[in-house]
Length: 203
Image (cartoon, rainbow, N blue to C red):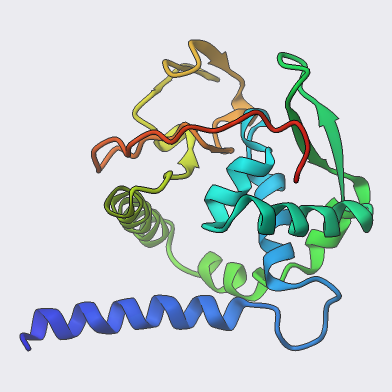
């Protein structure tokens, strides 16, 4: 095996190991690792992406499993269900005050603190590399890629906001850094689109 292959193996193993270290499995929280992921997802995603089917794609799980995770958070009062203003057949989920307060104790906090100690340029390069890897792997797997509007090929920046060609609409400053299910990475080809049904209810 070449040195390049060995280095790639080590990077892949370390990425998985870092993810494992961040999982909440020490019994200090009532939430499971999957529920933490769901809570973060609904906190970071834009309005059109805060749906059961989008979370199922993000979590790389089935719609039924995703629905059970969502129901657990809803029962705890951490998220609330709302009907879509544009399509009454669809639902989206927003964090409640309790949900936002819960994120203060996010198990990712330790990793976030370490990343904040990196130089800004190093963080930017790291983010660009990981975003490209995420998009490329999603394309290879035939899965939906996720990313923020500011890093998307559909996005055209403006003075204080921007424009999304996919949604054919203006984006406010607060929307640019939100996760979007229509994301197309700048460093990869556009991933194949998957058909999604209406999110009437999390099954």
